[in-house]
Image 1 (tube, rainbow, N blue to C red):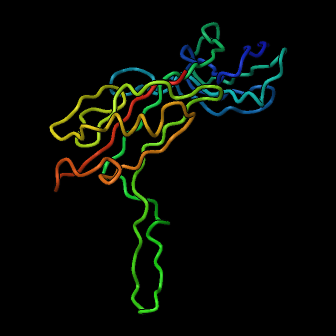
Image 2: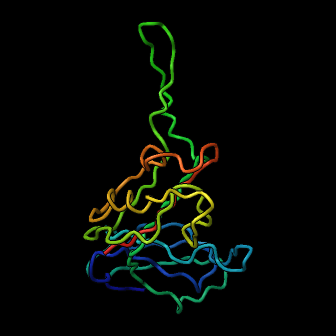
Image 3: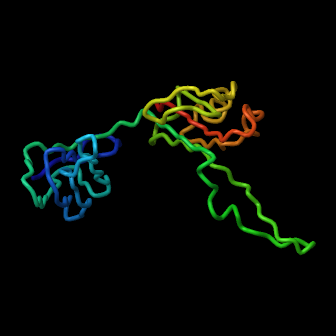
Length: 202
């Protein structure tokens, strides 16, 4: 089938929720294989949206070709755009620093030491032309849940939100280390901690 590119700069996706298993091409460029008929334990497809890079698209007359190996229904396919208004990050002591931060250095004393300068970080990144406008949730301590649903745990730094707001509000992207020094002290010594942040982009 032939279609026109959606207006604007938002990401473009191919909704293949009605298909089975196969591969898709846009203007001769493969956007990958799909397997919508493969379901997770909850009985729903593991993925239905497939990204179409805007660099693959022309303003009009884009050719979509599908090879479906099962009994998919191509009449249910749609070309959609995705508007990202929420960004979220969750890191914990269980996320080790990158290997590069363990790089050793020889000193004059001939002692070999390790520098663990990098800590896990929550990194938030809004789409182009949008900035972080509000911090919906922030907790350094033992927050429960994840980006789909969360709550403050038994250990919580009371200035979590203020620290994140100072680092992120009004910016397109920001990075907050999961470190008690950043949050003005350790709210619960001896307990593994995490940092969970949920924000809005406008």
